[in-house]
Each structure stands twice: as C-alpha cells, then as structure tokens.
Length: 145
Image (cartoon, rainbow, N blue to C red; front, side, top):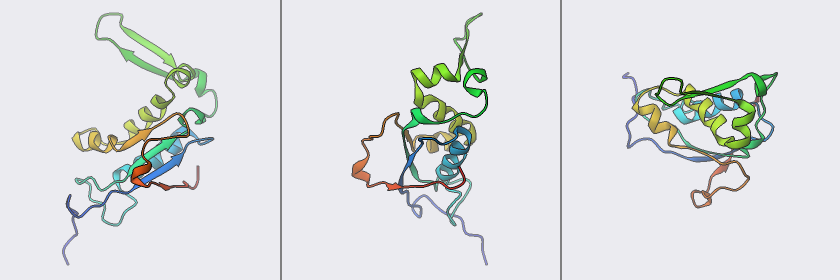
C-alpha cells in the first residue's frame, strides 16, 4: 500500500465563520491555524495547501488572560537607528483590533511561501458583519476554548 499524498486538484476548500466574542486569544489562534493548515482533514499533506477559508467576526471582543492586556508588547522597527516602537496589547486592541489575532495566527503557521498562502485564506473583521455571504460559510463552534 502506498502513502497517499494529496494534490492541488484533489483538495477542496470550505468556508467557515468563527465568532471570537469572549474567546481567549491564543487558544482561538491555535484552532484557526490548525484549520488553515488543513490538519483536521484526513487528506492532510504537509507540502500542499489543504486548509479551509476562515472568516472571524467580533475580533475586538477577544479576551487576554492575566495582565497581558497591559504587559504584552508588540514591537515595530522602522529600519533606522532608534526606530523601535513598542505598543501594548491594549493599544493595539483599541486602534486595530484585527491585528492581535492576525499576528497570533501568523506566528503559528509555517514561515515559507506556503504559510503566506495559507494566511491569505484568513479574513478577520472587528464587527459582526462580513462581505463573504456569497460563499455560504458554515458557522463553526470551536470546542475547548
């Protein structure tokens, strides 16, 4: 018996909607990364994009446990000397609520061109509405979060 290896033509990508309201950031991000990679499917192949499209709504209502809201820092460097900027998670959540979840999921995906392709299938919105109704996404309830 030969080992099955999925090809691009054999894979199907479904659309799912996840409501992030009240969910913990890291636990939610790991479940999303798992689904974007396609590890929940029996045809998972590491070098092929077998994952699904994920639409996340209510990203501004995600939770951080402990003192992470004030203590966790997000760094950005301009490339010039002294160009390091640090923002707390609280500031990021107020100004760009989608960036917290995007940054967390990006860190859990492969750091190569396949990981970048998987990240393009993630759509994050801060409100309850999204423009992907035409794809008929399925509501997904994540367990254990």
